[in-house]
Length: 411
Image (cartoon, rainbow, N blue to C red):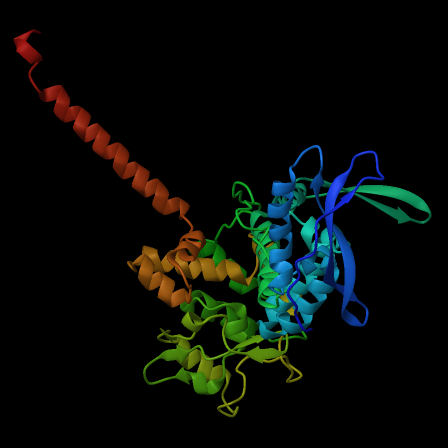
């Protein structure tokens, strides 16, 4: 749309109860057929509040973005239209798991709250109030068999609310790149609140892990030996479940006893690992021969772990029909239990075995030490041993002090 410089005369509206200064300017308006130019009245201020000199200054402020070609289009665009553009243009560039999560967040949380609002109506206070409402217990009203039923549902975790804020911020960032938003990102400075652990991130001890492995059943999905080897690989190498399911025979080096993480397989979608740091080579010792033996007879480019019918495995099927039943039978199941439990187990045990936090970070393929810290769990037995040593030192120090002569020789 061709731009032209505008400098309209300041007019005064006097046929109202409170006269005001205004200008008439041609501005772009969003229509179904695209941007159209329309003449609009833009108010500068009430005559009893500002002087003509102040009105002239206000006029320059109002005209500056129009003459620069940056008229505030956000005052006319609905957020749902921007969100759809983001979903079509940006989300497909992300990993399969992130795509699935972001689309769910948009559909279930963000669009119901902001979909019908104009961009300029979405402010930092509005976002903070919305995020706070997502933290508490929610009352959901549903209709069943013609009757209204209320249900209490637990609020979203700190991590889920952080995802919502980050996704909303990413949408406004893209809007600025697309020249659809001119101003500060309303998510800037928005806090999610104090981080609280919603689910216990406990890890099993060696005995419980063995009970779990022994309890893994034979299923129509995968044989028990293959399911045990999936867990063993995750525990020893610290791989994500998508990375374990993405392993091919060519990734295993039996001579050097290593595996290479070159790809991930997430619910049928095969792609690069989550990040550049996730591409790594891990020492796995005897597990290398176990993997090669299990994949014996397959081509180098074949996946090691497949369903019995030869199709790709889905982590949801494994969780529901293999790992959860085994965890329940072993008595170690808790809300939040899954294959990530064994990834946390690897990070924790690796450091207990003498690895530095940086070594544990590289082994897990984490992009930051902060994430490795979150994965590290304190073993109860080791903690009791450490506290015991502290108490022993206190007793030793107390005994040494008791043997010292009194100050000043006074008994």
